[in-house]
Image (cartoon, rainbow, N blue to C red; front, top):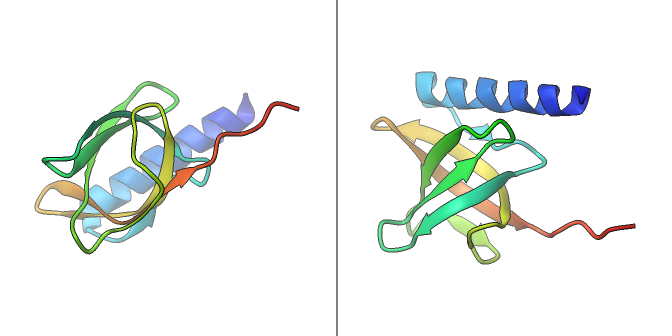
Length: 99
């Protein structure tokens, strides 16, 4: 449970820093769940473990590893510009195998 709270705190802090200063920040190392993908608008909605949603946009310059699909987990680097979160890199996280 402690890990979940630390993860949530790190995520909220990094998003706040990105929105406030336009600095580049990493999405949480464990990744965020993709709730919706709009390829035409080049954006996706990701959901935190607490259920908070954020929209992340990408461009031709964004390095994307893997297929962005609903239900997948993604991590990467984002920065704030013009009031939006823009990804410079995105990586789909492989699903964990049950032991």
